[in-house]
Image (cartoon, rainbow, N blue to C red; front, top):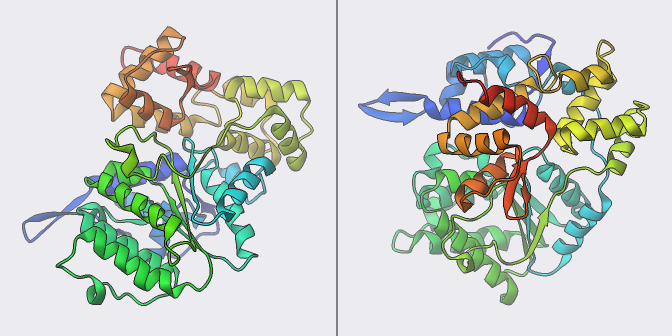
Length: 420
């Protein structure tokens, strides 16, 4: 194993996506068959533990040398995926949003409830549900949070693989023994097997109310060919939660970034039932409260200047406020002046967005049209919803417009260049 250095880093949300893309791109030839790189193989290749690899991919703080070993094994530059050094400081930044938290909390109290939380990346979806679930733990609830980001690529190869992985990971969170080989009946359909295993074994083992939270649902849409079957399964569970006593103790939370335009029959999905919660940007008053928390002593007019450039995007606000708190060599005015440039604190965030767009030419062209026309643009639904999930744009009626000046100025420069 590598000898650790004292410095630490963690991967940004955009960096996590870049690492996942790099991992998917790597294949090894085993007995004439191309196999995708697993977390286990990556750990072996980097000479670190499996838990260390998973911590890096989840964006947890990690010793720099371990992170370098893993990114080197993937062929990725560590500096391109990590959070800015000052933003890596462990410091409270979450502004309290009591009305949003209360709404989610009260919705989950209802019997057989289902809550859907939707917002682009970096808006605080996971943070919101973690705060809410912490309150339920004080009421003797059993809570399970799973992320589809933890699934290996081979877990998405078929519906059976995926549903067995789902049952396995939920069972692990409940500290239950794996009985899949024993209880999975090959004569039944995969959906029946999954429902039976969940009802008769997993759910039956829980004596009190169970909150099951499924994060990163977008990865199911992207990677599982039979995603509509899975959505239909969740809808059937929701229907059982309304009428069957054994299921009434289950409460579901689904977290996603993308609109569900791809589902042909919305009535065979969980996306038109339950309570839908969309997370808005931080308001001026919330930024003022956050300024007080960080003790930055910014004037209201300065906060308004800041919002004029980045809006109220929680992730970008955090990065600037932590930088101001812990870096004595940077001023508020310099953050504003260089925000949209390669010298600015958002350079990695902006570069990653550009790289992601370049991988999807249709999306890139549509976004370029919005940026270069400097007005709202009407797009086909599929492109519209994909762009919305990036967080780069917002709705303007039925059209799309650029989210903020930061994106407008950076991408007008980049996409207006003939070489880009």
